[in-house]
Length: 215
Image (cartoon, rainbow, N blue to C red):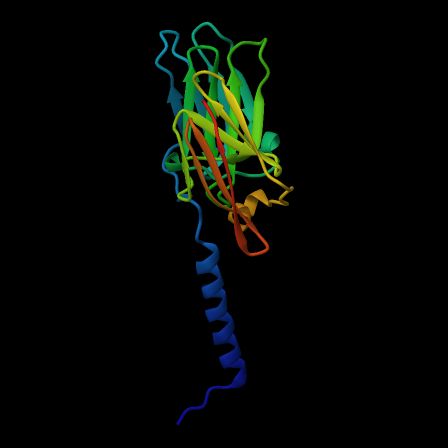
């Protein structure tokens, strides 16, 4: 009967372990496969406001936004966000407020981290960047489509995209959230125009926070 050497067994074990680890790490927030060169969003205003995201190997590369009477603006996503983001059309959306601005909302398919970018078409309004967003694409979150939500680790901020109205829910302590591993501390989120509910995780236990609002 043929015997298998210790070296061969060790090699087989390492191969098996490597395959197991790769299959675990391959589980992403969304599919990183991409079949187009860009993601394009268009508003319904007569001046044709558009936001176009260029992709490079499925990673967000550049963002361009403009309309018929505005100069084109260009942003490097990698430089602006400080890390690569893998994008898929299943976890990205864009809201247009006539020709005033666009709100781009998306998640990184690798980490699940949520982002919000406010892209003004006029030169007088400043661009906003939020790298700690709660988005409607997360299966553990339920957020009214007209609302956006984000946190600074001590509070949750909610804004109405149509009216601009805002509301805040304060925690009773700061949570040291790693936004690339959001669900280690944020269990679930449910936000409507009249209620903010967030369930955090503190020392292994769930801690709910709730507030009535008018948005």
